[in-house]
Amino acid sequence: MRRMVGNLGVIIALFFSLLLISCDGESHNSIDYNTMQEIEWTWIPYDSDAVRITGRGDSKGNFVVLMWSGSAVTVGFVGVSLEAYVWSEETAYLDVFVDGEEHPSSMIKLSFPEENPTTVPVVSGLPYGPHVVTLYKRTESSFGDWLFYGVRVFGRAEKDLLPPLPEHKIEFIGNSITCGYDVLIPSVGMDFDMAYQDSYYSYAGQTAKILGAEAHIICGSGRGIYVNFNGTMAGRIPEVYGLTGTHSPLVVAWDHGQWHPDVIVMNLGTNDFASGKNDSAHFVNATVDFVQQLRSLHPDAKIVILDGPMLVGEYMAKCRRYLDRSKEILEGMGVADLFRFSLEPKGENPLGLNSHPTKDKAIVDAESLSAWMRSQFGWN
Image 1 (cartoon, rainbow, N blue to C red):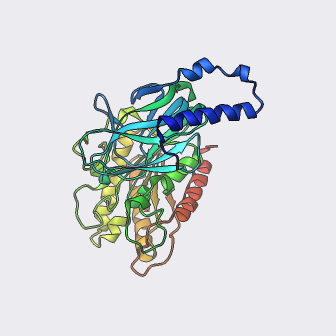
Image 2: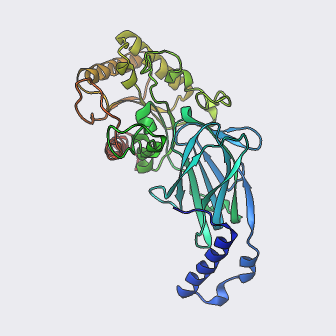
Image 3: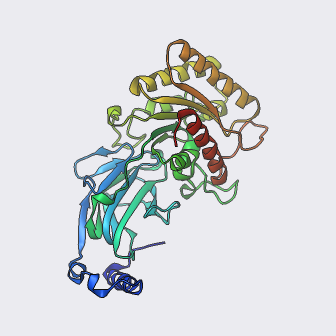
């Protein structure tokens, strides 16, 4: 885990990075020591062109609020260290990716008792040179939001280091499966811990990674399309879909015109059936209404109605039948570019429900879904 070690650590890092360059065969004359001596801490605000925001960000003047799972900040800079100026209204966990890492090299927990933003160490001791660092919100909106003011780098900002924008954009809509609830749990049956949730390792996050797509992940544990897991009706996914988050006092309506996905993947139904209060007609009607809402907001998007992988047996059969029927009704109404896909259940359970998918299962699901999407949509 890379951590800030203070200015002394920075000086040491600079020394060894220069030593490595020298040992690698580059002549001393090619190193601009005057530039090295002038390096200092540089402030990069959240709205700098060297910063890329992914997800439903809501600007509040000198900071941006990020709430949904998978929202991210990517910074390009030349230097050796980076620290973030942030705050969380409750608690949020962030993954740290450095220079294109496939897996995060560290995790940051944001939880502050005081109502003031705080400087949080992110990375240090990097070889002096170009770097790209991404902070990725792994926990869902209901646990806490994330206020991002900007970063300080020991070096300088460099917008040209930001990677090209992905060719494809996918919006994932779902429940705890999409949020990556318990996806990193060490052993099935253990008590929940926020550190075990990571949307990056959900089927959604991994599908986006495999396809190299930009993703918005709109998800909430326990939420349904017609009825929630606990039998309540308030706060179902269709009700919160149009917002920048769920319960935070900073939640506002999202302007859908800011971002139109190429594909919308909707995975809902597990909580409806788990509630014991699901009704076929209400479920189908709610599905039809929500897909119509999605189509009106994103007229050119392909919409994938997905099921699985926690329902099994009769629950799975009914859910698939109801979703198939919803698609038939929608197509009869003239709604085009609708697709159906099913993820295979992760195991049998007499109650019709399984524990949440593990990381390995989520990756299998992502490989299955991404292969199907490539075939259906002609993506590379």
